[in-house]
Length: 561
Picture 1 (tube, one colour):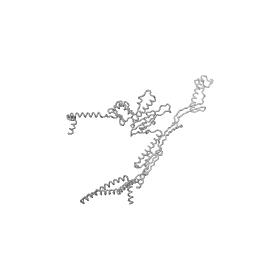
Picture 2 (cartoon, one colour):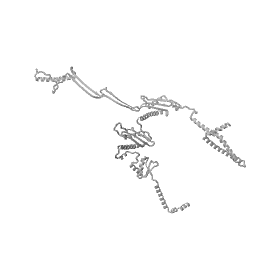
Picture 3 (cartoon, one colour):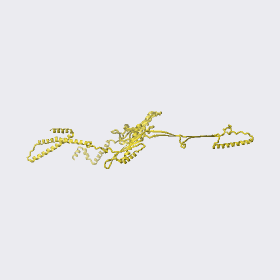
Picture 4 (cartoon, one colour):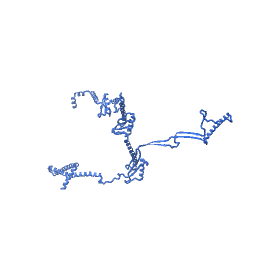
């Protein structure tokens, strides 16, 4: 209470406040607390949140300029990779910047064509269109999950009227992948096809994809690409063959008891053969008739045709007869009857001639011509590249352990079954010339030669280590016998001699003092001994060579003496 009274005496205002009622004091305290809270909130800096991060320098500069024009406070992170704005303005600011087309992600697309200038040259228009196309393709490639950024370069030649001067377009894609990610062959092929499908007359093999490390992701075309594909095909066939054989034989002979190797010989020659076969002498039933022509002419003993031009008939006139026995009317009737009889005879003779050839002058001519299509077969055969020409497999089996723990060869029946299994696993073909070799032989790790104990490198190293420690212990013992122990004894005798003798009246007191003196001397000697021993050990560990030299000197002195 005295200290409180003294404090109130120093501050009269505090004394007056203490005299006020409690409600007034509570009100004053509440007001002061509210004022402190307001001041703290006002003094606290505004809460900033990330507006955009991982921006390129160009996009960052454009966004900062836009924020300055919009009078929006902003901050830049310490590493310069993020732009911060007040938390209550993040979403509104993003919408306003998106209206201005920010950020552009470092790529421009067809928006370049929105600002087309009047009077631009054809070259300028072509370059602008190519830049826009590159930006659009880069944005499409960046949409893939594993790609952080991408750049597309197009080489589009100008159109030429001359066929020999025409060039095909090419493209190259540079992709930047996220850390720890990679692109599969299917994804690389998808990128190449995406770019080639966007450019007219661009072949997929003319597109190159490279990552940020400079590694070519697309398969090289030409001989280099063919060699890589051939090598990968051969390795794949050999590995799959060995894997199948090992998988089948491991349960039979045990793990680690089978070794298999395969050698595949492929024929990568490209052959094209065109053959044309003609079959002119085929059967008429199988042949196709191209054209047919028939000509027939029959002539017998008939007078050549004669007559008067313009007459109604072209028949020759009848023989003139004198009207001696019959009147003219009767002669005419007889002539008509003779003509009818001649016609009938001619018809009969014609029919007879058709049935049976008469004896006498005649002429028959019949021509028949049939043209058939010539049978021709054209075959164009292209043999596939990479056909398996020969497959060779070699299998080595280890001896098996018997009940006595010794290795013994496999039975012949088991070897025959294993050989048949290997043939089935590799797809053996005798026509192809495949070969299979199955050998049963002990592995080298089963029969290691016994090494003598003194020749074993492991035991030799252990012996050298033990010898080193033994020499150190011997040196410490000799140093203790020759140096440490005499030194301790001399120090003990000197201390005993320097101590004054205390008179004692009684013999018991003298005996007690002598006993105490002996105990003190022994304890001091023991402590000195331990100290000297410790120092000697440290000296021996630090410089064993010096200790060895000291011991050799002592031994030489002792030998001479």
